[in-house]
Length: 338
Image 1 (cartoon, rainbow, N blue to C red):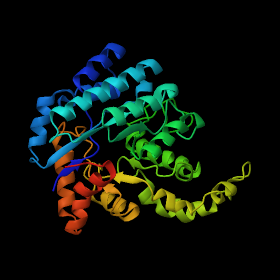
Image 2 (tube, rainbow, N blue to C red):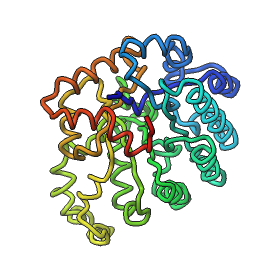
Image 3 (cartoon, rainbow, N blue to C red):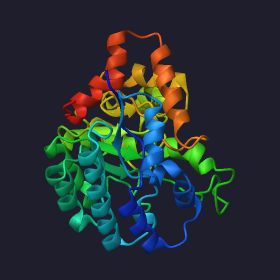
Image 4 (cartoon, one colour):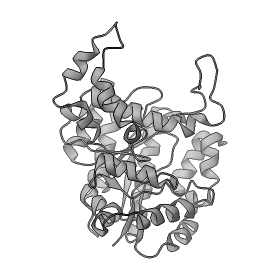
């Protein structure tokens, strides 16, 4: 049985070098990412991976922040191309370690986005594309982003959705910025949940038949707030007088809670067993996939991999379900040939 880590992050050297050319001095989250050796040092990545045996492998993806936070639309397209080319080359060189990769969609360049996604998937062999929960503050359900989701649904490839929010999003209306990194600890799960809700109520799963979206960090807040999401939203419109929100809910072909269960979730929960258990209970056995979020742990790589593997191995679940989480769900969803 393989242990296929479907959401961890890398900055390949050609990508990292070009990123530095564009942004110069790194700050905040880019500084943090660049300071982790495993992000840019392939030898260190191999050392960490070897700690978990030859059955452990990684599906590569670029790290946040989103391109649009750092560069303009043209440079976003350039970085997307370099990132996909670089990760595809790593997969060709080390197929046992890296069975596939995830391209990053240049969403801030809508005119070129679909063509680049098509190139990454159809020419380079990407398993799917990574997006973020907003595009420079735009919600994902704006019509200008619809061609991306339409293409991904028709291509039959999953979308990996990574949260994005910075300190400039304040905790309170009358403040200028978030304090104590609340923007990350609570803001990122909220971002994921809000993006999921916008997709559901904008009828993404009705419009884009076959669309598959993998949510980072076990589905954000959704599994834990099933009561508010389900029965709570059954009363959508009762709290609002300036819009007919009841009509929004009634326009869905199925009960809204069913759509939330159509998302996939990963196990990147920073060592929380309960979060993984909730994800399995909510999304189902076929929609939860092993991921570590390496290398962003206090040890710079090994800790989240080690803790997540240990939790899954110690959970009171069947061996068949364990195999699904570690390997089979990824094989089925990503179309892998091991």
